[in-house]
Image 1 (cartoon, rainbow, N blue to C red):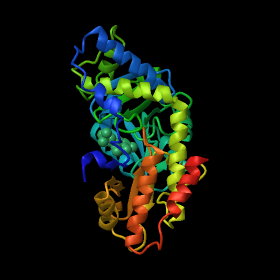
Image 2: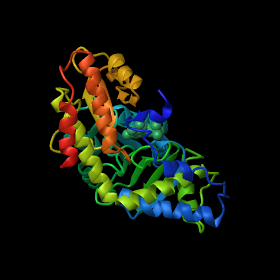
Image 3: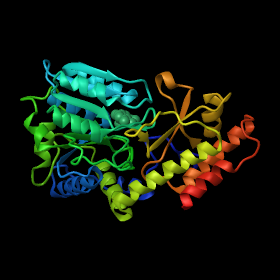
Image 4: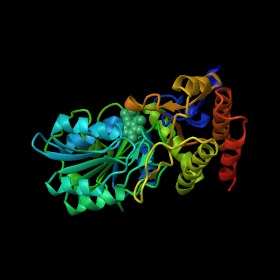
Length: 381
Ligand code: PLP
């Protein structure tokens, strides 16, 4: 299969628009120039629309995890407690990071299960400098209750750190309204930029509670914020300049579409995937409740009866459509389809059509079309 014909439907990295790819091939500029500073400042301003914040934004060269690492390293010292809530792979990553820098108090739920807020509150009652959670748990396709945890963080005066890596730009994400002190995203998700930039917003409250010295030299948020506030805006170290070109172009695209319109499109697209799954008799993986919802950016589905991961994802790959499998204990048990960034109706219809062809071959369905029809009904509504 020609790489040009391959359709990437994983929950990041996502498809990148040709005009964004072209922007990356511009001649190099000095990262200490006014030209670079203008790009940085414009990106930071536009990113505030995605983050729904007035807080200062720092753009760092590195993947999303760098943003998570920077947040915890800047706030948590050896003697400080951090409550880390998890119901999937990336929540558990916060626990691993917390254990590196301080005293971690994990509040752990089974993968794909909603948070029990009473357990979160009980952990916070014991006293903690910070609480960290993942808004959109990519590994299980569940959107967690950031607003409700934000309320608890405020009540117990803890710095609220939220991984919005697969959320910001796709799901509703209200940094300021939800009391989020440090919010993080990565360029390769809903921003539809190639991987390599981490974006972090930091509230004045979090800045007041920074450690005198971050445990990280490279990811020292104080240094990144200081450089971002310079005129022209800068980064402490040499950034991945072509990725800034790409980010600026991708944000122009988002502004042209409208930030709210983009979120609404993702919501409709995810609903269309869920509708196709239902029509094909495929069960969704996560459990939802009044505060925890199916994700708008990634749909996690159980592997259909009697079909192996190799047959399903391997078969789809041979037809040029790449979807994700399960991670760790969910390997072979689920598969996931991303609906982020510039994903189109055509991309989605091709994905479901390809899935149907595999299910037909495996004897799970007797004819093709019901999934595509169900999807199309939602997309056209
Ligand atoms: N957090 C979430 C919710 C993610 O989806 C991912 C990546 O898939 C990460 C963290 C890690 O991001 P990165 O691989 O960019 O470091």
